[in-house]
Length: 330
Ligand code: MG
Image (cartoon, rainbow, N blue to C red):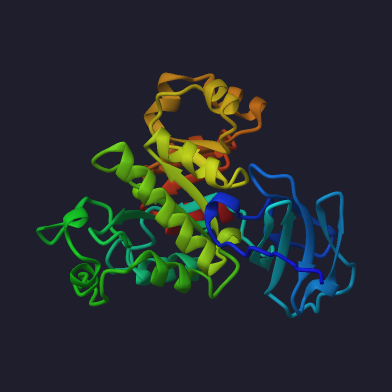
């Protein structure tokens, strides 16, 4: 009698990862599959497996197999190892993401009258046609990632408050304080505006790593990878994101590391205060040479916006997305 022993695990210690979660009509290579820390053989599973081909761990979409009206669909990958098999379902998203460099800082709230870091502010950024909408993530005492800029909200310290208590709070524009999960679900109803997820520094390294893991658990559960670029002031959080998934796009915010240092650690980009580029006038050229993405925050002044547009950086984070969009259309 042959006994098949198979271990299906959803722990991040053995989680198949994919280097890219988008597809476009012109390009039939989707991305590279791997199981960090393991030797694995991959196979495709589920209803959409027939739309793809796998060769040397590279995933290809079969030409003409996807109907033009499809915006995204799910594909299950099974990684087989000597110790069992691990599976993961990914959402593959048609790449209709806007590339106009405009990142709405905490959403588009300033000129729309909605609360910053609200789902309404995200929806306004989507309506405007921003490339990305940025938001900030903290974690409640019961380990639920929630959206807010400051570590406190309405007199409550987030890390000592329960998620139930926090999510019952009303923001200025009437909606409840969003959890990361509800926020991402709102963002994933479209495929034009990226979700720029800032993981906030917290009280100690242990909690920072726990927060990072909890954020990624939500992203994996919702299959939100295609939509998300990560940013953080905490370098340990950036490194932990890349340890959990070597293909995440993560940019560092704190301004104290040269493009050379970030490239050596394989970060995706630098996302520095606009003054950092004035103090280090060669960093934009250096970053371009190293293939890093470049973002400047928070740029609201028209002359400064123009200066960064002229320097052709990848993204500009602003409280004035309407103004920057107008400048780009000119
Ligand atoms: Mg932020």
